[in-house]
Image 1 (tube, rainbow, N blue to C red):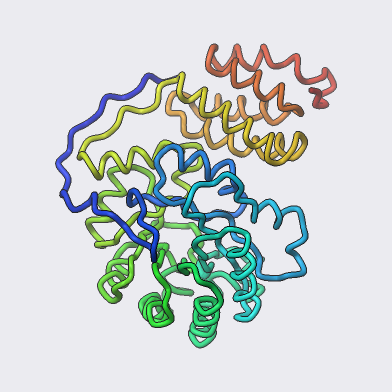
Image 2 (cartoon, helix red, strand yellow):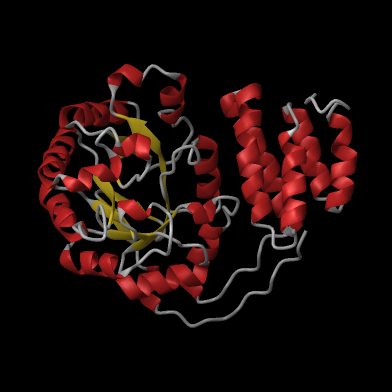
Length: 364
């Protein structure tokens, strides 16, 4: 594992440490975890909060009541033990159903309701939800008005810059949101047809920020403290919202917050801290999902942690990931983590080989 890097001094504007308010909630900093389906479950939210996120937003919950009884929906609506404010994202394309979903989640402890109009996934857009809603501004206004009226907690909105390059209507949607009573707006710097290709652009976010008075969160390709500071300065946004940059790197929140407050980079986490965080994260996944599902979900997180380790080349990352993915028990996964922080990759792979039967089948 790599040794920690030394902090680097950089002078930053004092204004970057200003407080941020969403309705009645005052956030401790300007660094927010973006909602990501399949990623921002309760264990990951709690971890990111512990490591400096000022607000964490849960995975999107469907507005379709016929799916609320499913295990996936019940887990996504589970916020036990989470500190205030608890932010829940809802997704759908029907105003009445979204309003009812907002009421349900408020009753279950949500303190901020976020509406998804930014997801670019086909399975979401094909149901006229997510970023597909940006094509129908009348429906956008209807949904926002209905949800704001349905709950007593602040409502926020997440969007993209538009549906496509020729329909860059983010500013109009932002103004609709402000008129409807939405308390804050997150903008991803790509249109829907880009999905996650190319690079995020921040000119549209700057235009939106200049055109509304509610807080605006800049989202898209925020993968370092320096990038966060640049985007805040360039757009004038009130906060940064970090998504994929947090996968395998939950320390990014405290690093950004420290950089904005003090103008210097934090040393990277020590091997001891990385090991502790990874062990605790896996244990939380196993506990939250149960043995079988927890083991499966832990695999993608371990892959992200490995990808973020600058001391591992791609061949080592692939080999270690394949070894970990062959493990079928939480105990074996924890043994892997212990070995990972004690030995070089080849030794880890060799020592863990006993956890896989000679015929290649997975064993405990």
